[in-house]
Image 1 (cartoon, helix red, strand yellow):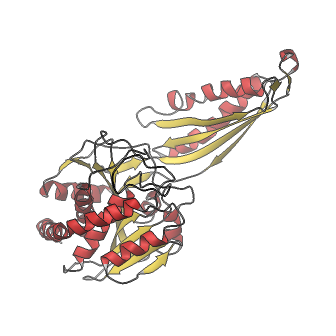
Image 2: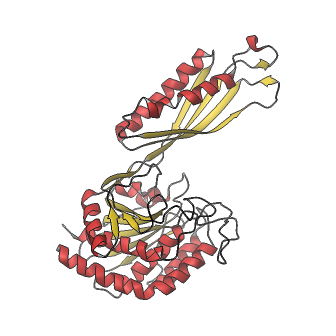
Length: 386
């Protein structure tokens, strides 16, 4: 399709979504009030499928769902939203707040309602390409639902996949559509320092694992400050330190763990190597030994350049303020799709006044359901442009 033709489709689709917004907003509040954590999202998926009203679809990744909407010819274009909530006690105080010990503190309820409106509205249109609605489980955990979708063939016949995510780091009223890397690769590391324990009254008789670990934690800041090109960036964060069982005993073992996030594959490998080198050499200086374990998580999430540029143009035509420069060192298993097919992650700015992602007080306004829907429509239409 030509650019003008896709602009017309986007405008018609948006108008169809607008008619559904009151019902989609009610769905958003219903989902927000009853979140389910990763691996337990069957009821959430069923509620969204029932609301869309186009059949049961196909179960994927245990608790996810695939809904295929015929249209035209050629390969499918997918839109994705996440099903899971977080184990967070909600503190928003709204009448429709969750009370079950879980919370949609990352905006997944907004994404689901936006996707549902997009797919239901599409049923009344003559789409030029088939549409796949991908309701994905387990985005928040280390057990990636996206990778399971890929492994089970959920992207077979898909040419491009589109998603939108609310983002308080972007100003309200602004949509970020950035070509290239937008989310970091995220890996976890664990460092165990072993020494010679003993009595805290005789420090000359021990090889203090706690002292050595303290130095290791400080030295690991070199990974970001001195070992990686600062224009590319890296975030190496120690988030847990554990040692000892008594105030007057020097423990023989201390453990720390954290995450390392990078935007380029070569920096990812460098960071892994440097973490091991720093931990081993610093611990040795204190008479101790260090063992490092690194577990790979999500890869870099890189937007297809053509999709990003064209989607930005369409969103501008729809009246949105668009920026092409926002990147985040957060991670998202949507990257598993981007390694397989053309992918686009759009960030819908909500501003920071309502809290941040994963915050018990984070509550995007209902109006963002429509903005998320616009972003998904723009992504689909962008994929139609050669």
